Length: 417
Image 1 (cartoon, rainbow, N blue to C red):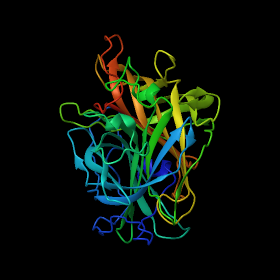
Image 2 (cartoon, rainbow, N blue to C red):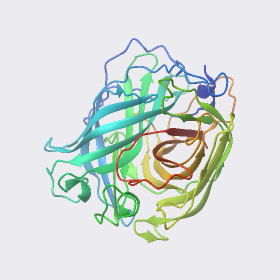
Image 3 (tube, rainbow, N blue to C red):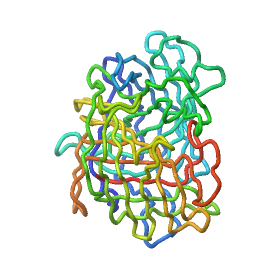
């Protein structure tokens, strides 16, 4: 078992088709011997790595289209997320997968886009104590979703995506879970589109607004009668990081670098409130100081230059929770995260050894429990996984745009809290 698997903690379960329309990619695989290492563990600083990831399947998933107005959830809309098999890109452990969002009642395509999946980490877990284990692979996700015009409703398609030629930038995470005995796959998808302040900021965005200053949107699956997703607010707690790593996701001369283990870090909430529009209540979002340093000298630190930039350090937004163990990911809370960080890369030559990066990703807490042997760190049930979407060397002139569309990934941060 790798150090990453020993340091990681919750999530799991491969399920079969459930009545009420739930579907998982049920094709068994010969790769059901797990856990298998991902090949990214470092033997020394700044060394090449040979990633070892399985072939991930296509899947179709009953999901919820959720909209918030002034941080209050509107009634959920039933949608289907149809995700094609991920195809490797030229990036290190990066994949593309076609994503279509369909209306449950009519089957009409509401939105579609090319999902960008940046692999962060893997771990093992079990849904029932003593039961069969599963291995989970997590990806930070981002996608430009284009509306089809098939609906005039205000939810779940953002107004910005129904303007001719425009797209809506979504971000979050995608999990693939493999039952180590049956070889059956399960998945979880959480994608979020923020309000104008963050994604349609006229001075920063490739898609300047105004479009929806007080509305936000999410696509979350699974959402079934057996294990529904419920919108809710959970305030994040302060934490010291207790494991995992940071990594350069840009191949240097075609060579991927191993991850850099995290030595120390902290996640400290500073304030809470509604960000769309700015208000003390409801406290759906939290501004959090977030910093850390790695074993080779790399480091990161969240920045607050609000209101010049829309982020107050790392901004997390609570979306809600699954409440039962009927399907992966089990009883788990889901949030998304975005922010501007100062990133120092000890393995990168100038000018990219010190950069400003806009990061996006997801945070989860709870879910199925792991059963590690010889744990190297205290158990954790809270994961934070981030991928950069904009990188600017310190001292370089500002390059427009900085937000609003999918851009190249350069850095990954993934920690246990």
